[in-house]
Amino acid sequence: MERTGNGLKHLKINQLNLRHAISQATALNAPGGTIVLYVTSIAALMTFTFSSYPNGAFAIPLILVLSLVIYALMSFSMYEFSKEISSSGGYYSFVSRGLGSGAGYITALSYVSYQFLSFTGFGILGFIGFVYGVFPQLGINLPYEEFLWIPITIAFVSIIAVLIYSGIRPSLKFVSFTIVIELLFFLITSLYLLFKFHDSLTIAPFTASPVGNNPLILSTMMIYSIGTFVGIGGSIPIAEETKNPKKNVPLAIISTIIILGVVIVISSYAQVIAWGFSNMSAFGNSANPYPVLSIYRANFGFLSLGIYALLIILVINSFFTATVSLGTNATRVLFSLSREKVINEKISRTHPKHGSPTFATFLVAVISTAIVIATGVAFELANPGNPIQALIYASLFLLILESPISYLVHILTNSSLYMYLRKEGKKISPVKHVIIPTISSITLVFAIVIAIDFDLSAPYVYAIYGSIVWIAVIIVATVVMRTKYRHKLDLIGDFSL
Image 1 (cartoon, one colour):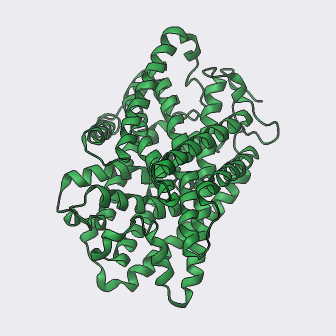
Image 2: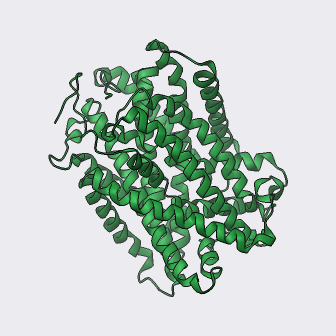
Image 3: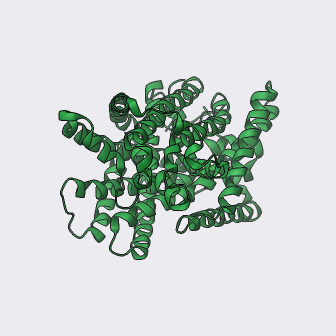
């Protein structure tokens, strides 16, 4: 293994180019899976929580645009940092350089937690929930459906682990090819739907009128919708393996914002227009868990069957590639923590040929499988006789659980940028390096406060409480680390190409 000047080993360099970096970030976001799962989940959450506005989900495009703006602000600090630091440690390396080892450790634990929750809640449970939702529409009855998802989970995670173990370049070759097909499919079909329903086109979905111009509803839903664009920073942990990372990773961040924004917002607009304002109360309810399937199956004439089949294939592949990307990033961050001696050094062992972190891959697979099974069983016990609903609830629960944790990562990153530039004696722009990060952090703090204060319906409110407890545990763990094992933080965030 090659070593840098500071004596820390690194992953194989120059394996990936800009296309791969964009593909990694875009695939991590799973545009197809997001269009199916997140749009439906937002609608279900709105209808369930704000029953006085049964058709409020018609405002989902506006909510997504606002969420994209917020995430773009959140992305600015990581964009600036990625021009300076290239490390698989990603966010925690940024924060360690700016705010010190303690804040870096909090960021590391938070980011790893968020990765596991996304890997399980969005990737695995999103995939299983989709399969369970689509098979009945195909006339296929799954045997032992209360239990079948468990071996499916084990098989799915095993395939993902093998692909990650085989090296990043082979997996990203596949991802970069299929993600283009996925994006073009949803963009073209959405534009067709808008053309077909042109008589129903209205600006209303981009206004607050469907929710009675209630800013509280928009603010609350925006909090849970920010995760729609969570893959924008997906290229950061693979910086070590990317050619010219201080140029290509920032470009990948900007490109991903544009690509995801255009495709997801247009697709959501096409869905609500095709479904119709008066029918929105039935959009994403338990009787119709994936309304996009109904839309695509009925609106493409003689091509409907083929379009519908291709949709299913692409969405399944979307969850698959997203899980590969999430797992790849999680293994890179664990590798980085291990090489810097923050955690057991065995976890930084890499395959001599593939260059993939072998122990980290195994660790991600085992922990993720345990989380999925525990959460799925818990929600099945709470929703007996309805495994589809239970798995969708479990998925959404983990996605909400991750939200405040991911916000904490971005708040710390925002707070670190000015301090890092000042320490390094670099030129500081008040607007770029102080005002924009501050606005982003204030927005995220507001989001966390609203999430805690707002009377969200069960079981989702328990995810918020769980997230706050999780953050408290991370802070306590950091205090213990700094007081009893301070020497383990000596190298945290130290590596950069």
